[in-house]
Length: 159
Image (cartoon, one colour):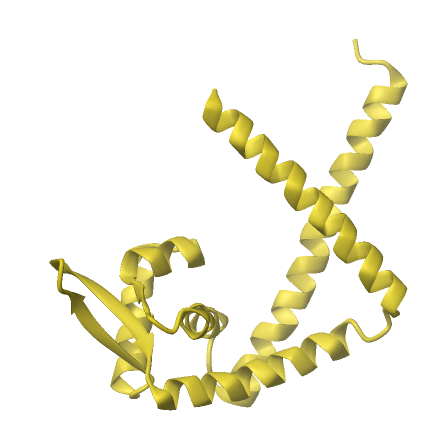
């Protein structure tokens, strides 16, 4: 049987997990609503455009799926709508004509930049009560958590 200290540690870790998810969900819900009300767009659409904005040479549909953690079908639907609006372009890879790459058009880059600037303002507003020290501490701790999770993943992959 686990001793009280171990149980308490496990309970605290579970509470941390619940708090992380709860806070993330609250922020995401507000951001989703703001994107819809101000720009009439979904968060997945913004996320896809964000991935393409960072990769000026474009990404394959498979790369987009992996980055967004969604199926190829979900990415295809978003890309088709963006293409109809002139915000993205698609082209086949010369090395494999079955694979499409996608990139933002100049119009897409411009529209994304407007949304990204507003997104930054919204996040600043949502987290406005946190002072610089709070943000620095939380950023450091989240970085530590990311490092622990990556190391865990690597250990599992090795075997």
